[in-house]
Image (cartoon, rainbow, N blue to C red; front, side, top):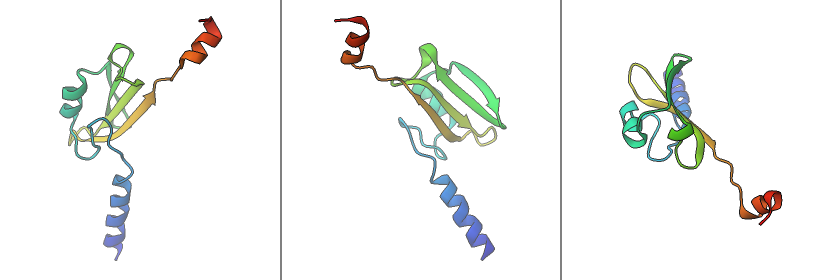
Length: 99
């Protein structure tokens, strides 16, 4: 009974991670990210996970930054954090700066 509960809990946790732009947490590997988006702007370690960060000139279209958290032993992507780019429409620009 206890094992069934733990299995269900782990399955529910894995379901929280959503795929994005062709990268699927729990299925995609580190090399899939680099193959799709090129070399990251920065690679760092946070909470025991390798973080591939894409920002500035390497920012992925529609974002100001994207971070892929990778398990160092399996090289599987565990989490994706996206920081969307702001949307500025023509009316807002003309309202601030003129036509």
